[in-house]
Image (cartoon, rainbow, N blue to C red):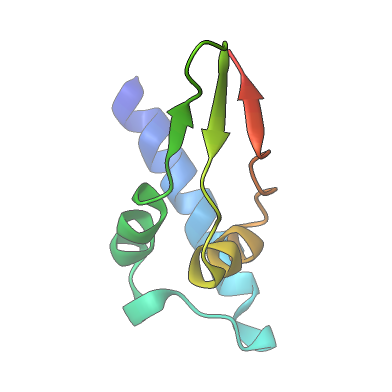
Length: 80
């Protein structure tokens, strides 16, 4: 089941990225795997003494990938 779910999400992302090719937006290296590695760098750290996580500033390349896939940017503070 998990494999089927992962493959479905992967295909949805590929279709979304292919739809934006006409706008000049493309995946880095024409590879979804490279895009996932780039998104993996985005992290949130737990604020000491509080029940929230704080995301670091999102680099432009990563923001471009969020736009390409149609994903909203994460909030600056995420409550636990």
